[in-house]
Length: 489
Image (cartoon, rainbow, N blue to C red):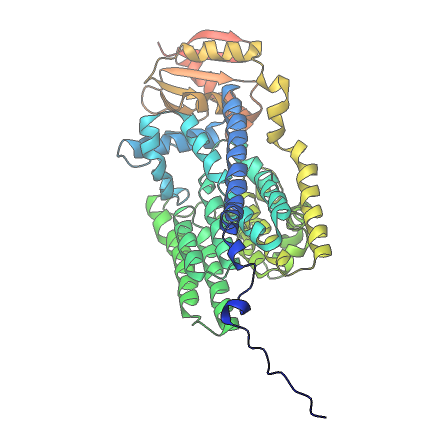
């Protein structure tokens, strides 16, 4: 029996085409929408934190909590830039050129805004916007690496991080520019975009003299990535590292001494301990006293602990090194504004590890970082937004405003720390503890109950200068409850 075999069926190209293909067109809007979601989340969080920072900083200025060191100093510098002048800062001393203290010419970018709105609030609002913008690249990268929930945690952990919140509420400092630059540079490094990382890091040499070392660290990581991937030459990264190192050396050894009244770099003595450091003393200084351990522990916890395994964490080494080796105790702990530049590095290191981790490890790391944020939030000024007493006007504040109102615009004034910050934008202000030049200031304004009156002016120096002014015949117009206003005869 012969069985007939039917020929194989040949499917046409139309038959082979997937039936679902025509239905793919409506997906395009959803894809575009999902691509927009990280940007909406990132910029939304940044706007929210900028508003919170601004509320806290403006309200602290309104309550008279801002200080001449440093808001008044930077306002005098930006005010000079805004009028096309060198940044001469009387609060630092007669004829003191501020580029002899720290190298931060990038703050001149604020001059046009200050010229239009001549107020210390211009500086604190600019700082709020700058620091909040660091949320954007880290949130978007976290969304790309681990999804929307991780992006929300990382974005909130960045905006509410203890270092940034403390700095955003602490008057104004030049590192407001460094925080977003480091966030974008670290994110570009993590995404293997060496050119973008280099371009974002280069302006750091104009923010502060020590940040050239951080630029050098960026260059080293670019060279390391190139060598590891074997697709690019490490030479551009090494060139960037050499540039950053050279910029710091030239700034510290040449530029700062050229503008400094003493012809040197004022902060050497904080690094050498006032003398020749011993070889065995340096390691001891690195880890003692134990408050330095708190700084390292809190930084590692902010990175979810796993972040310390990321090469990006090396970007924190230059800043940590000079802080831990310094003899200035203000640099060792978690107060003040010095840790702000470490926050984008720690969070970028966290995201870098998340993109290479399993789900369980991702959840643990994010939980640790979120817990640190939740625990530290009540300890730093951001919580003042919801404190009713922080928004009240006390009788003491009313009396202080009345005292300041008696000083006319354009007058010369010797003032205590907080009062000087209120006057720096409309008067020629010096600190009360400075010896007067010539006939002396027209006005002397002091709040003896100001807790910051002991620094930068020692209490004894303030009392001595008040006695000098009284001996010169200065007439007391206000002398009540620690508030003192003297007028030159």
